[in-house]
Length: 229
Ligand SMILES: [Zn+2]
Image (cartoon, rainbow, N blue to C red):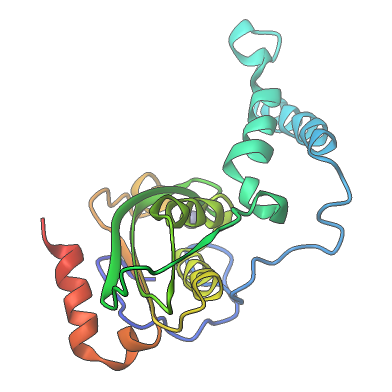
């Protein structure tokens, strides 16, 4: 999507028709193979290590050098256990719901949740802040759980629009509410460090459902809140 654009409604997702910089996605689900979890984490690390060694050697790097020798293994572990651990549903946070004892019926907002992800077109970092709000349906979850849900979906190769929608849909499901807002503000290293080399631009995406979508006052209250210092 274009930079410096805060889109307040996710536009219809278009099929990928271009191999380079057009960062749009074809589906809300991360495209996964049927055999995605046939291999164990350890088997995946072993394979990625050997492939990454070939990439480095192809680039002409000397892997007998002390500083480089451990890199293929390190990268493989990082991919499977950290950077892309959110591909595996077994790592999905389990959220326990609590009764909303105080009958609090206003919006709950958690802002400035830092996240780190990777652009699925270049495999370089996307990082930024997520702001989330919901109206309780009678149940609430611990605030740290919202944080974990954001991190879980961020730890995949992503496009920002899909990441935003995945977080919104999951929160609707867990909280059993139809009123969710997710706004994400991110820096894309593929824009900052290559291509147009614009280091200052940010990309904004939003997901609004229920009251946030239907009631402009509610949406404004949320946006004012997240824009307040
Ligand atoms: Zn990219």
